[in-house]
Amino acid sequence: MGKRLYIVGTRDTKNDELVYVRDQITQTGARAVIVDLSTSGPETFADGVAAAEVAAAHPEGAKAVFTGDRGRSIAAMAVAFESYLTGRDDIAGVIGLGGSGGTALIAPALRGLAIGVPKLIVSTVASGNVAPYVGPSDIAMMYSVTDLAGLNRISRLILANAAQAIAGMAKAPPVPLSASDKPVIGLTMFGVTTPCVNALTAALGDAYDPLVFHATGTGGQSMEKLVESGLIAGVIDITTTEVCDLLMGGVLACTEDRLGAIARSRVPYVGSCGALDMVNFGAPDTIPERYAGRTFYAHNPQVTLMRTTVEENVRMGRWIGEKLNACEGEVRFLLPEGGVSALDVPGMAFHDPEADAALFASLEATVRPTGRRQLIRVPAAINDPAFVEAVLTTFTGLMSSSNHDA
Image (cartoon, rainbow, N blue to C red; front, side, top):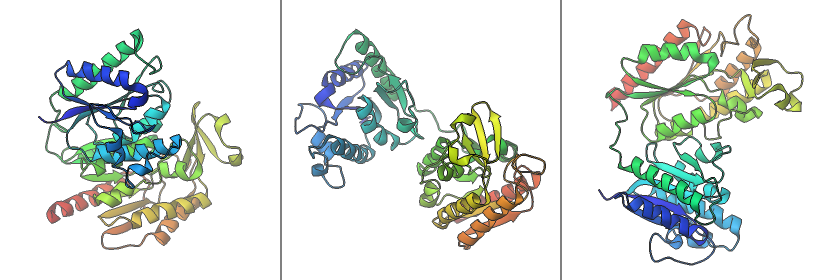
C-alpha cells in the first residue's frame, strides 16, 4: 500500500518533463515522486527527492558526486543512484527520462532492481543499440522521437503514453512467477547443444520448471541475474560458449563476472563445455585480420564461427577453472570426451580431439577438487543420450542432496 512510482532524471535540464510525467501518473491515482539526479550544483526543488540525498548514498559521500567535473560527477551519481535505489523497499516501478548521458546515468540502477519490478526509460537513444543499457534486465525502452528539451506537442504525447504505461504496469495485479510450486531451474543452450538441452528439459519437466537461456552473452547474464535474485533453484549450464567470445573477441561475449552469481549464491550447479569449440563473428568481412587462415564455418550469411585452437582452449580451461574454484556450493562440471558441440564430432567441421583434450587437461590442472567441487569425464559427445543421462543423474543427485540439507 505504501509503494510509489519513482520518476527519475536531471531536474536542472528536464524539470518540466519530469513534472509533466508525475502529473500524468498521479491522474491515474498512483503515488509518484520525482528523484533528482542533477550534478550541476546544490539547487533543490520544493518537492521530491533532492540530488543531494541521492548523492549521499555514494560510498564516499556526496563530495564524490559534486566535483565540478561533469564526466566524473555523472559517473559518481550513477553509482550513488544505484546504491540509493536498490536500498529502497517502497518501489512500485521506475520511469526515467534522459538523453545519452541521462540514460547511462539511470540504467545501471534499474538493472540492479529485481526482475519483474516495472522499469521504463524514455530516451533519445532508444531506437539504436540498447543492449548496453538494458543488459540482462527487463528494462523497457521508449524512443522519445524529439529530443527531451522541453515540452511540445510530440513530447507531451510520448511522455503521457510512457506515464500511462508505467502506471498500468504498477497497478496491475501481481502475476505469479509460476503456475505451480515446482522448483525453477536454468539451462543454457546454443544451436549446437540443442539436442542435449531439449532432452534435459523433457526429462526434467515433470519435477522442475525449466527456463532455457540462449547463450548469446546476454543470455548467461540474464540467467545469473535470476539466480542472484533467488528465482532459480538450480542451474544446468551446459553451454559456456560465451567465454570463447569474451577471451577471443567474439560478438556474443559474457562479462568477466560469468559464474560470479553461482559463486555468490551457492546455487546447485552442473556445468559443461558446450560450444567451447567456437568463437562467433558476424559476416566474413567483419572477422579481425589476426584470425586470417583459421578454420571457419558459415552458420548463415550474418554469422561466422571460428574453431578454437589448442592454445585458446588452454586459456579457457584456466579461466573457467578459476571461476569454479571460487564456488563453494555444490558444483559438478562435466567433460564430454566425444565432442563439445554438434560440429565437434567425427566428420564435422570442428572435430578436433587435440583441442578438446587441451581444454579438459587445462580444467583438470586448474580446478581444485573438493567434496563439493568436482570435474567428471563422460565418454560421450555432448548431444549423446549417454551424456544427457550423466547430466540428469548428476543434477538430480545434487538437488536431492540440497533439499535434504535444507
